[in-house]
Image 1 (cartoon, rainbow, N blue to C red):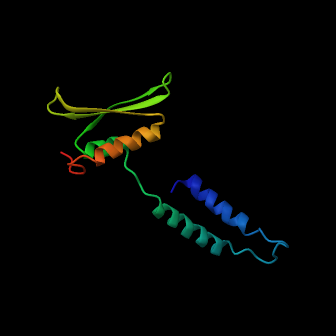
Image 2: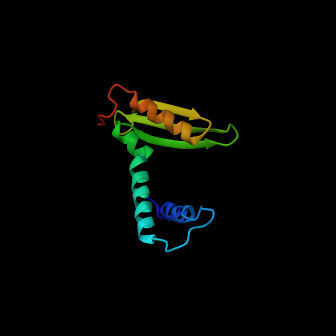
Image 3: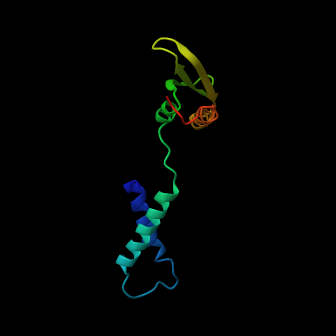
Length: 122
């Protein structure tokens, strides 16, 4: 997990420990609080799925990422995928368009995952 996120979790744990009225007295057990924060960071890191970059995902399905374009005038994103037949000829070409990059990438992943040979690569 990124250090900035980890630091925020640790800071939040410390702040939450003081959310009492009246505030508690005594010694704050920073070692125990650190263990709680480390456990939370580990749980968060394991709960977030790690998604490979789009280019890697595309390549795993036997295609390659030709272009990613943003058309400001049309407010759209476009991802162009190609499947090579030879070094110069394309067997297949797929252009995917959407309003946001995230939506465009999701559509590209969905297209590739839905192919009959999805996941086999070449």
